Length: 287
Image (cartoon, rainbow, N blue to C red; front, side, top):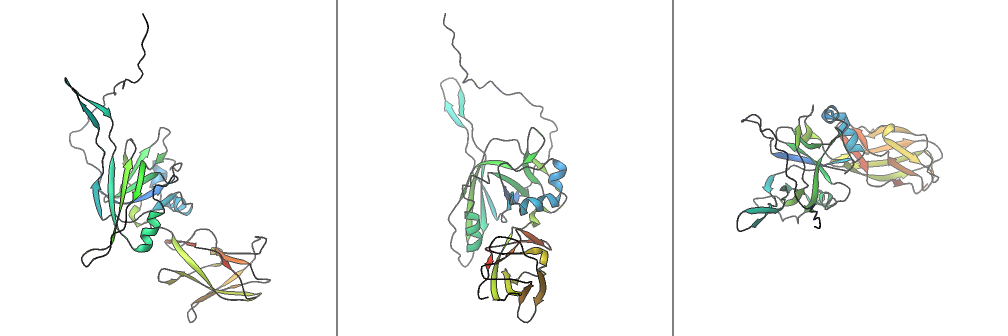
């Protein structure tokens, strides 16, 4: 007789203990972080440390998102076949959610840049109870929740009674969710601020400029935050005079500055509690 092999069988599941009847559920999501697919915290202790989150943000391994103003279910239910003698599941459902954000045009543009991203495919949720929603891997490292889709909807128009709203529709892959409380207030972490560097004047020994962000110049720039390079991309030795309160300009000092040298914020710089990154390096002209 010919043998028949059928590997399409589900194989069943291992029953788990149900535990205590009264157990606390996680809070509702207040905000969230997108995370690179390969990014993880080493363990629970590492996830609880704010300095590790600051480092991950500076490296752009995680991207802080905006406050969630409304939450809607976006689940895909199991596909059930209704048969003569019993119903059977032919396809597993997917967990999903829709978040509503009240955003400016600039914020909407930033959010839209992550639409269906192939790079940021994990999400760390932050709840109203300051819990981090995540997935613990088999090796003990901790990643964000795995998502299968991240679709940014069209921003609505502002009307008298409501702010403009952008909806994000998310589907999650199958995973076991953990929630861990960090040692800091996770929803206080903001995104990186863009900075526009504006050249005021340049000579062989002086570069006067403005570093504009939300509300004016970056406060308290230091020389360690800046880098000047020549056309061969060699870093120059520089000094920095503090912000002139009358002209609202900074002044970099040095020697041998020339046209086509560049002045830039050195990667992502944290000043106080805020992280900054320039939109583009400032190219020297007029020397």
